[in-house]
Amino acid sequence: MYPKFRHEAMQEGHDAAVAEIDEQIAESKEHAEMFRSVLEKAAKRFAALAKVEEKHAKHYQAQKDAIAA
Ligand SMILES: [Fe+2]
Image 1: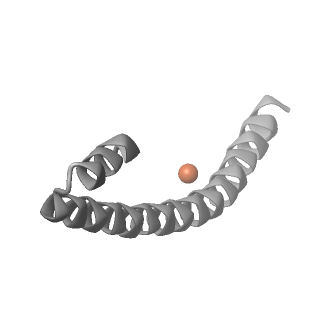
Image 2: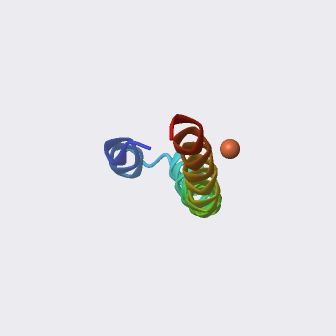
Image 3: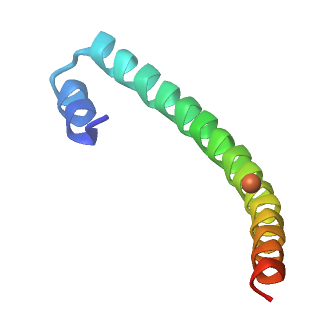
């Protein structure tokens, strides 16, 4: 949200607009927390997947090396 809007609404006495902006600010904070939480979970899952894929890659490479030998 744009802080200037809230400031102007307050100066102009638009209480309903100020209340609405405050609600939007609170909602944006909630959403930011949700996004942060999802990103954190995704980062953990990708880190785990990276380990598994590294294992696979090493296994495939070992097989290739055995064939080439
Ligand atoms: Fe794999």
